[in-house]
Image (cartoon, rainbow, N blue to C red):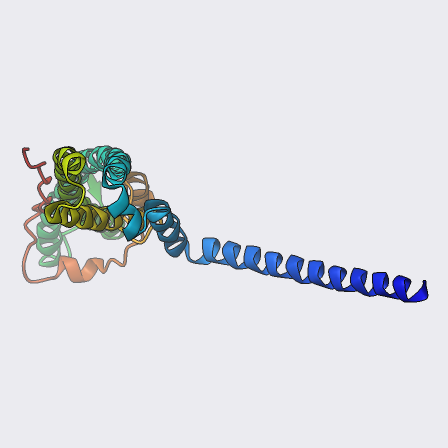
Length: 286
């Protein structure tokens, strides 16, 4: 009786130890997943999408049921195509808005530059006549030297800020244009793969061991994986694109390091031409 009781107690201890170990392992795995999701979002997203793309479709499964795999792949590619279409729409909106705003900023910057170039001529003329050069006539008012320089400092700071904002906008417009070109190409590639699937489903129904069919299945698998990785990188922020809101808001936060006297006494007058805005990338016709 005592031996039976001791045996049961030992069994309970072993079971308790096993359950404790299991709980520790589960907690460790959960913590690891949280760390990956928090500090390596790109790896997390790519892993999720890769598993989703290939779960249940081993090479043997593809050969055994090529029609099923092709139909699955078509649905997956359509989903990817929809995602890319949504991203394209968002990027086109941002590109359009930034293009409009950059034209406004370029116009303002050109006006500031024109005023500064005129002010420089007034400053140099006044400098040549120290006794009678001031007050000067500027923008419909008369200014003593210190007042004149204060006004010019304000205008030059605004001009410098506009230049800085315009450079950032044009850089972002170029980046968006590049991304749109890539997205248009990816969408076209997916569309081509979907059309190829429709053709090969008929072939698979007639002869699922066709070497041509197996080559197509391999190509479709690669395209699926390529799009999963590409979308994973985009969604995880691995391909950062500065949004219109941030760049437009930046105008009020810009800081400048303006040396006014160096500008006024510099050798060559600036032309006041606005920075050239990159042309929007047009979508290729299908």
